[in-house]
View 1 (cartoon, rainbow, N blue to C red):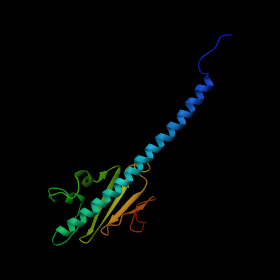
View 2: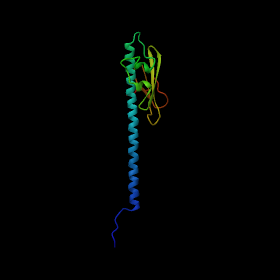
View 3: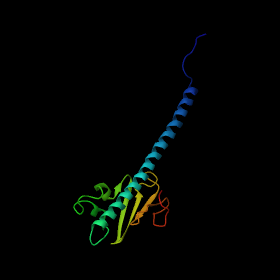
View 4: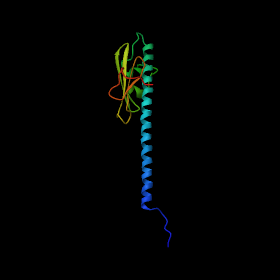
Length: 147
């Protein structure tokens, strides 16, 4: 009797099924990590914008918040308070919407460009400096603060 060497079709299918399961888990974890990184970067960008607005307010006389994010970069501000990419309104898969309310107040909203892919939560900040988040609908001052 000859000794046959090699794998049977069933054995190969079991190995492929195990590899596919592991690949699915790894890919979903990588995508989730990117999603979380985008959201953490957005919180940092919101803090940067709020700090820049507060510094702009302190350095202008009479005191007033900027009317637009473009007021925080040259030629209006030299040196710039924020980078050009952030002033353009889109960074890390999020769209930033700055609204000048009056000389004493502003609002900032950050919404994912592709909800569910670039981020899930929506963020809100104002002159108070508190960043708030909401997973459903547009974020506002009534939402819980980000920790």
